[in-house]
Length: 441
Image 1 (cartoon, rainbow, N blue to C red):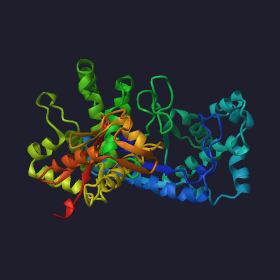
Image 2 (cartoon, rainbow, N blue to C red):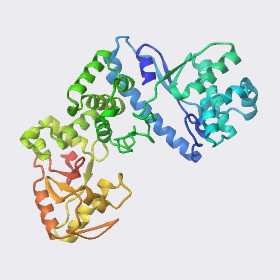
Image 3 (spheres, rainbow, N blue to C red):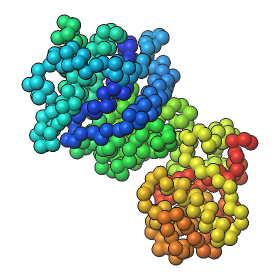
Image 4 (spheres, rainbow, N blue to C red):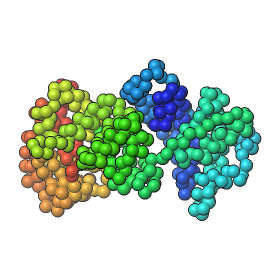
């Protein structure tokens, strides 16, 4: 966001993917050495990161730049790999031209070094020299792209300072660094894929839709706990003006149950990370799965059949295609008959698909603990004691005739216009179950 804000005021932006520095691993803020991945993983990860950065760049230019600025054509946003210049640098060249520009005492004073030494864990020489290695990036960008400012999180202050020192000592020139506050939890921990804070169930918020569908991305932000909400968070993660932030925080104070800040954050970040179609799909699925008008006792199936326009139905049909991956959907043919054997196999496949990415425990036990509903017909109540299930195991489900009859009743309620079923696990996990090729009709 810091780079995009710089771009919005007229700067050209260079984004560097650390395909070279990853071989060492940044020790900043860590008490232990990072795990070393196999070299083959570097390339795979780099391609995925570049893909996500390119998506964000495109979504930003299409949905935010033109809305927030009047500066005409945008300046370039370029994605680079530091392995392109670091991998060609010989060891002797690094020691002679780079390492010789630094003194041991100044590296010892770096926060990353002090943190490790004070913890008693010690530090390898390659980690100790990491700030000097990252300084090469700034030097290269300064010399080849006329880059004058490096932007990074506050934990990168020591690394950025080394870049400034290297440029001045080697070239006699001056450059500048800009640090931005880290996202932190209420207890001060870094908010990232390994730390998500109290109330978020330790669920990472991945940018890749292969790891987390846009709908799930939207939902995780929508369900951020109130203790994480602040005007600072809005300033860090959105392009809202001060007046807009003040208005949202006032609405949050007056009606926190409606989650105005979380809803605004979910919209803005889903639009930035996944684009307009993904945002529309996420909001449409949320509207279906979580009817907001409680007084009318409206159901998910009722919303599809009674409230969606034809255009919205057409959009939903497109979003359910197997290759789109915008909303949670399971594609499955109906059981061949309603015998206990066929129903057990079919329902077991549905539940295993719905839980395989979320739990390491038995999918049977997990689903029975949460409760299972299909089209508003309760198949298993929460904390079911398995009276209707025989011999549950990690990969097999066997149900009795009662469950077969309930499931047959549920499927008979499927939404007529699109032929959709709604599978619900517990209170918050929902899946569309498509039993025919809706996207071909």
